[in-house]
Image 1 (spheres, rainbow over the protein chains, first blue to last red):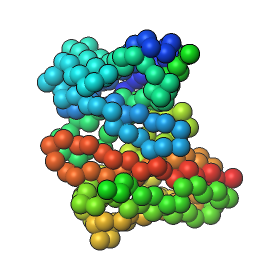
Image 2: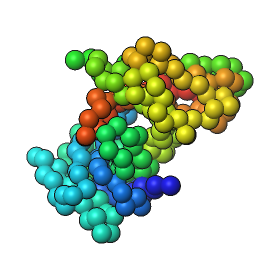
Image 3: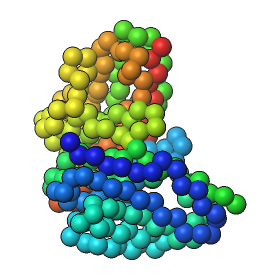
Length: 112
Length: 114
């Protein structure tokens, strides 16, 4: 079945850029997503990218997609303490309303 | 606009007991999902509804889990009997079916089975 892999932890200094990486196996993925989960809160969609794009920028967030290598990354510029959370990469291979396949999540730790 | 509502937020039961979780999706969202998130893992899809029809329940352990969405709005997920390994957070999400699938998640129900 589909698989999504992420590193478990990333530690960065406040003000630096954070880059969270993800690899996936399903070559038929149509959309790839980044979700954020803060303690005690639900998953919040941060951004997404369609599989025919290779980059998407949204304020401090930049998503890069290398479809050939099945590699997705999320860059957060000027990382702040409020960015501390777990970040999940997810993919859907069907159109419309298919369920998502999530990675295990990357804990982003911000050092002062 | 209200988000996805789930109740209860926390539930502690003994093994072999039944338990039920309730979800109210965002108004107008015809697609509803139940996911299970084990500790240290990402959510895993259990079942997906399109209106009142379960269109993907391939990952639902049917020997002990059941779900319903009778009027195509609220949904209930039930476990009977619960086992120790069912301890997890049960997440409900909803979306308005379209070409882009933005799923909105509720806060989840944290189940502890003793």
